Length: 480
Ligand code: BES
Ligand code: MN
Ligand code: ZN
Image 1 (cartoon, rainbow, N blue to C red):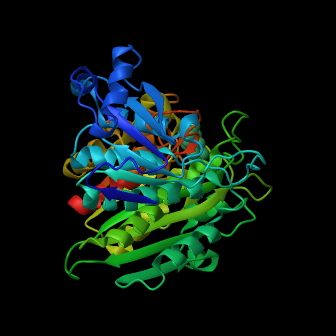
Image 2: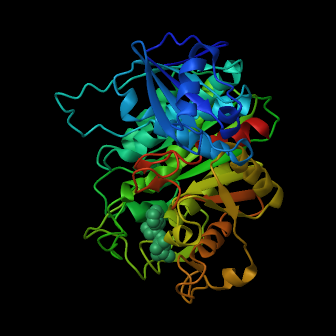
């Protein structure tokens, strides 16, 4: 649980006291522990350097001094990283309630700090057997000393949605199937007003001819789904913004099978869908006066005697025929059908898709920035602003007609891979999608690198799913 108070009490099991180098030099310490810290500083034990952690014990309470470095160098990302490290430090293992004193009282700092206590401390432990003698308190209460509690309440709701997306991505692909995701969405919208729900199951997908999406699922024993949620928070005449997620519950690559080393994390391939459903969760908590469509195509790219095949030509919802150059370029096929379906049937003014689309995006931008591309600069600009604001970072990549030429096919209207191998993979992926959005304002967010991190302490995330996109999309919705 997270709560707020105006003044420090030093009455909890533990306190984390954030201090900049300047504050340490000027001895601006909380009065309750002024003498204790001064002694340490005089003894040269604590200087307030970046991420420096120093525990002291006063009575029965543990006080963790946390250095933030020089005030002018402190970014909100760094603050999240340092606070996460403090919250997870061995010194606070047994603390149930932790008071947090920030280096200054403003909304930006307070919101970044509560994210450290929500997004930062998240860990996926469903399949880890707890050690018998481990006395670590798993669910801690944090009390933040700030007068900006109101702004933080929203940040916490959004952060909880981020962690919801992470749970969906982290669990096994055979647990988080398309049917499971449909159930999650049904649970989210149950009892909510201004919502309508459309579910396309196998029979409906066939009847409506979402042939590309069905081809991708052809080798799977699981049921495919397209789920569309319409949220009408503003007047009926206000145009809708659509969010469309790639929901590959597992991507083996299909007959163009992925090699070992490239497949192990492919349960992450539904991270776009997870971001869309988690953004819906945030929207239902914040209730913005906006009109929105949430949609995802949820299927599995399995390998089987029934799998679709390299060289196939398949016609999807738009009527365009697609030559399958590679069955591992499946995300764009699923998205092509869902984008075309949503645009035709819901007529949104703008559409944003979010997808773990290309390994090339990981090569280009690593795990720190998502790629943004599209056909509308105003939409991209607004998304980049939200990316900056929320720390869900993004970088624009270019689209030019030269890349479109690379998708030409001799036997179909378009091909799902580029004829120029090894070049501009992320841009070619976006070029393919562009052929299915027509004149609708559209932006594509490639999160292949940012959705999942394989590491112990990357930024302020632990290992696994990051929930990337939930903060970005929620911010975009609220501010546009
Ligand atoms: N799901 C993958 C992309 C991916 C790679 C996501 C790494 C997360 C981490 C996607 O379906 C894929 O396999 N793309 C191919 C496209 C290629 C065949 C044109 C790729 O990137 O190699
Ligand atoms: Mn693939
Ligand atoms: Zn994929």
